[in-house]
Structure formats: C-alpha cells, structure tokens
Image (cartoon, rainbow, N blue to C red; front, side, top):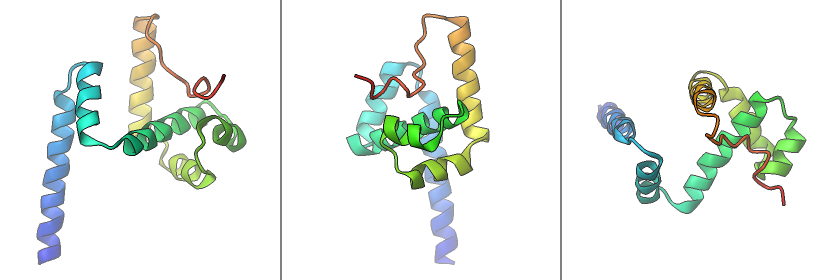
Length: 115
C-alpha cells in the first residue's frame, strides 16, 4: 500500500511540475525557472537530448550526432526509441513559430560545436 501512495504522490508532484511549466510565458521566465529547478549539468543533459532528437529527426547518422553533441551512442539510442509524440509536438510547434516569424532562431544542433 505504501508503494501505491508513493506513486500517487509522485504523479501529483509531476502534475504540479507540468502545470508550473505551463504557467511560464516567456523565454526569460523559462530560463529563470529552470535555473532554479535544475543544475547546470541537468540542463545540459536535457538540452543535449533535445538536440539529439532534432538531429535524428533531420536524419543525421549517429557518428555525426556524437561528434556534434557529445552524446553517447547509448543516449542517442534511448532518444531514438523515444522519438514521436512529445518530440513531434515540440518540433512541429517550433517549426510553425519559425515560419510565422522568420527571425526566430531554431538551433538544429549542428551549429552547437562548430568553431
């Protein structure tokens, strides 16, 4: 029974987190909230996974993704198995946003490590 309550509390906490994120209205608000919520390493990990997903969606090969993002092949495989649903929603909306405002910069990830 304790496990069930723990899962219920965790679901409630996750719901509260999702609702908190949905309250954010600007990029500056997101930056402030996530800086408070996550460590630098956690933010880097999340952003790396997003870049990996974008590159996979753009049909980059693993070797190029590793070289560009520094992600391990295990991470790339994990992200590859997750592609769809949530990633598709975000990428489709980012693409629509960029089309509506061509000045909007949407990083494909390929530019990240170029110097």
